[in-house]
Length: 138
Image (cartoon, rainbow, N blue to C red; front, side):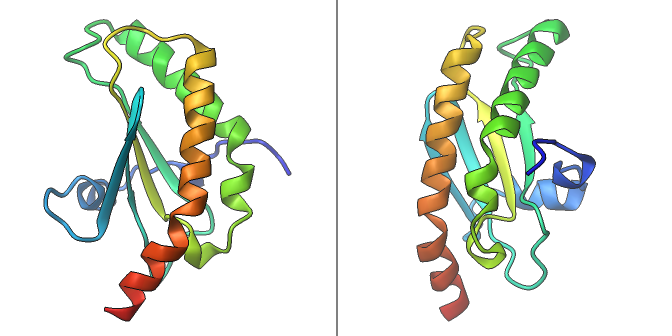
C-alpha cells in the first residue's frame, strides 16, 4: 500500500469543517491524548473512501508561521506513516472526518508526536464499532 497523503484525504470543505467543530453536536465525538485533542464524525450515508483529516495548530500558542508549519509537517508525516491500520477497517465502521488539534505549549519532537499518533490511531480503530451501531439505531 502506498503511504501517501493526497488531496482526497484532506478535510478542506468549509461545511464539513464546520460540522466537525460544531459545539454541542451529538454526531461529533472527541477524546484527548497528549499532545492532541481528536474530534471525529461518522458519515453513515455516503462515507468517503478515505477518512478526511485536518491538523490544527493554534496561532495563539505558536506566533510564528514557521513553527506552526513545522509542527503540522511532523503531524502529517506521523499520520501518513501510521494510517494503514485505520484504512484496513471497513468503511462504515471508521470515522469519516477527523480533526487533530495540537495542544502542547511548546514545539515537540517528532518522536513524541509519532508515538502519540500511533496511540490515537489504535484508539480510533477500537472506537468505531460502538459509535456507528449507536448512531444507526437512533
